[in-house]
Amino acid sequence: MSPAPFVFFSDLDGTLLDHDTYAWGAARPALERLRQRRIPLVLCTSKTRSEVEPLRFQMQNSHPFVTENGGAVFIPVRYFPFATEGAERSSDYEVIPIGTPYASLVAALERASRASGVAVRSFSKMSDEEVAAATGLLAEQARLARQREFDEPFEIVDAGQAGALLTAIEQEGMRWTTGGRFYHIHGRNDKGAAVRLLASLYRRALGEITTVGAGDAANDAGFLNEVDVPILIHSPRLDRLRALVPQGRVTRLSGPAGWNETVLALLAVGS
Image (cartoon, rainbow, N blue to C red; front, side, top):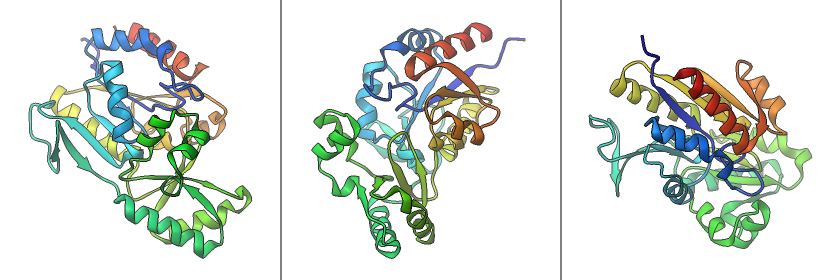
């Protein structure tokens, strides 16, 4: 019996993209192998649609993707051989919105900040130049990062007061998570729900599949616990992620080099 086909789900920052440079060249051999074998690679990220689209083009990726910590699922039109329930047509995609609209998140964060007395710096209040300085992105990339729909990244000015603010966010009925650089406020969505939805669509289209996920931070734990083979990319955040995903296999290298090495090894075993 041949092995079940793979479907890969991958975080971007700190995983497929280098944490500091955002380069992905070290992962090129594995990306090419996935393309040759026609194995789906679903990008699952806190980045915006505006950020993901040029990356997909550069990587020659034509598969669905998940933006803003599970805020929305984007499926290329006619990708699956059936209509996608609950999807809205937008340009060349069927879009399944899961998250809370951005304006509501910004307002909730402002109320939580006032109620807790804890100051924050959020993307909605930062300029493109300030986001670029905080992230290492180029100015144009920072502009794309601020085009948000379902998730608001923010910094807590006094980290020692984080607990009070995060409690206030929860009292607003919102959720929060942490990525490689920022806290994020979002609604009832998360990457896990988005991956669970897409995996069900792939199973409907392909039958039995083996799902693989790769991530490096706490906001990846939800979807890593949904997949058959969770990969934890080596990083300074590893201890926390390992506690959240104890069954995950840890890469030897960090970033796209670790991603590349582990994906190639998986494909060799599964071929």
